[in-house]
Length: 265
Image 1 (cartoon, rainbow, N blue to C red):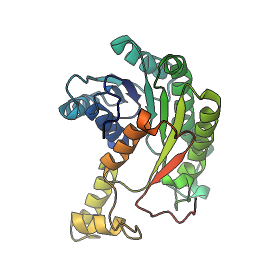
Image 2 (cartoon, rainbow, N blue to C red):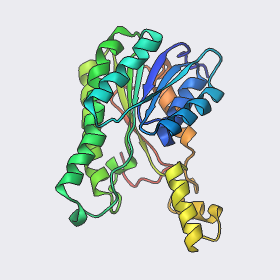
Image 3 (tube, rainbow, N blue to C red):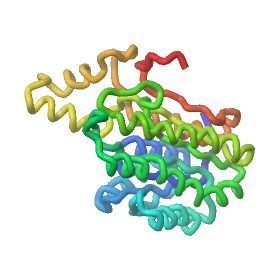
């Protein structure tokens, strides 16, 4: 399927690894010029090379280091696609996860930090990008959040609670910015990201799992498709939602969890 986004320009935050990088790969493979972001400059440089390897002919990949919790860094990040390519058509927001712990072990500082990382990073990115997206004939905003907004996950109280704010923001943006700009969200379940790989490998080293494959099977327990997701499966959905092929999708939040969620909606 031709997504008809070749030559467009996208900004993908927190994209030097994991689901953000997969989203940037999927966009670049469709011929989109992509600006990616991360705090670790070495990892960011490697990600640029990796994404460029799968990019369609003519699509360029630019890395821009920066901390999403720093307002000045966010402003500079949003201006980078315009400086490089003259315009901006798509914004994909992603961010790392807050600490994993139960409610009574969390501190006020951790709550504020989680809000700054997960919510204010999106607020600042979108606010800075809206003028450019309005000038585009293809303006889209895609928020990568978590399946935890549909169904709370044990010992992830910060993610369960704070990421819900991003969904409220996404739905409000869909209402307020349409028809010029569409806003949607994707809700990933378990995918084989570097974080999951690390956890499985640690389990093998501890003797919890006999092999890496056995560890993946354990993580897939309870998922109807009997496996965890590939990051590119989510990335390809992000590319689809960024395209005119999905032109009538606005204000939706789509789980990408292999059917693991127990919620009816």
